[in-house]
Amino acid sequence: MKKDTAFLTNIQRDFRTEFQSDFRTEFQLDFRTEFQTEFQPDFRRDFQTEFRTDLRTKKAVQPLLRNAKLSRIIAYLLILCLLGGLCGSLSGCAAAKEDEEAVRVFYLNSEKTGLIPKAQKLHAESVYGKTEELLDLLASVPDGEMYCAPISGFERKDYSIENDTVLLEFSGEYRSMDTISEKLTRAAIVNTLCELTEIHHVTIRVNGALIVDEHGNKSENMTANQFIYNAGSEMLNFEREEIHLYFASEDGKSLVETYRTVVFNSNIPMERLVVQEIIHGPNTDFNYPTVNENTKVVNILTRDNICTVTLDSTFLTNPYSVDPEVAVYSIVNSLTELPAIRQVQIIIEGENNPVFMDTFKLDSETLLQKNTKLIQTRQ
Image (cartoon, rainbow, N blue to C red; front, side, top):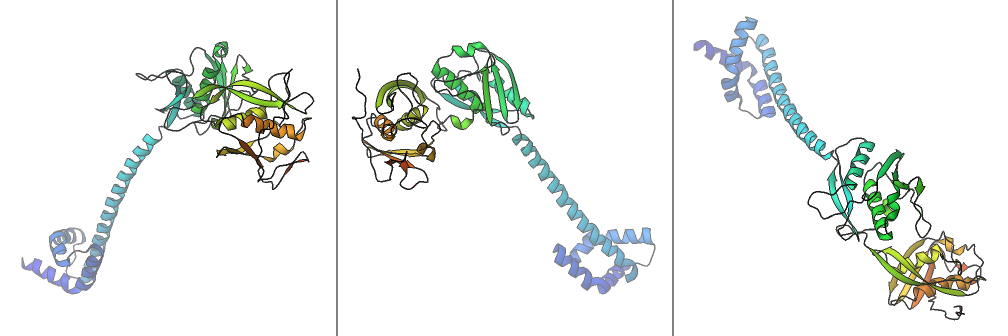
């Protein structure tokens, strides 16, 4: 007991200031309590068995004290590393679960009038594997759900991927679908496949041939943004409507009225649909196009019975042999056939007071009304 007391007395006298200061600042422990309870037995044993030297000399004790301090620091660092590794493992597990990609698969509703998105998990890692999974999901219906599978009534014969485009080959039964069902089926397939970050376009062929709709649009390089939808609800609801349009006569000096039945997405405003149909041109041999087919509708807004149509500058370049008034009023007369529109304002994007075909001024203040004098009298 006396030997132990002498040992502690010497240690406290020689190293109290340095050792106590270090431990108080770095570990915030009371030197006396910490040393007596934790270090005294270990120091005595280690010094007596390993170094066989006089424990009361500063020269022998100081390296061990430093080693003890270093050991304690290393112990704390190891604990931190273990904790960090545990957190990393947990976050790695979470990340692995997130890597299991979740995408929306689009199904037809039970009435086959719209599409409904359904979240599905993909397990494959390659783009081919993911595409195969999606095509399988499109050909089946989730258990207990009142959906209709888009790929139904015809067979998927083959598919391939070129860059960011999926090329699909379907059997001839695909062409037996009615117009609305075909549009919905195409929309479901394109929207679903374009959920993959690697896929931006989809091309569909039936027995080697592209599908061509009533406007001459082909089923190649289709993108998801071609199909407008309202998130969170049934989407791509289609309607059938008869619209009243005006195109040019054969000599391009008068307007010929015509009626066209169209199947359209109910999310698209009727006024936009009318303008787009004028741009697409006629589908009969007794009237003729009036507007450059490459014209883009930038914006369209109806307020207080005034429809403001903003077109890109392509509209100013007209390749057809029609009078300027006939071209302009083919839009105006067609729009004013809609009950909510009485006047039309045409604006060209990026142009101030443009002149159409060098004679017809289109300024932002001009409001145009239906022109009945240009309408060709029926024989």
